[in-house]
Length: 80
Image 1: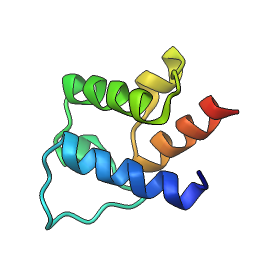
Image 2: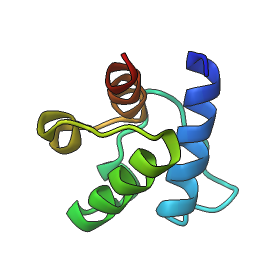
Image 3: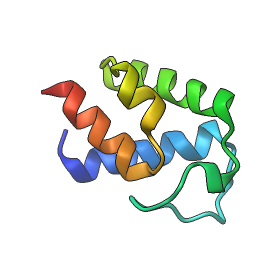
């Protein structure tokens, strides 16, 4: 899966997990906490992403993702 496909899937999962609805536009710079994500939401998001992409994030990646772009980068690192 290339970068753009990974980004699109991450955006879809973030929308679903945080129940954002259709009116919210996300990109790589979107800050997850500004979307209202608390620590429980972020944990749920990380778990969902690990399952969806068949990866395991290291502790740093799991706790330091702040933006959608950070999530995509963590997935790409976990795949390599």
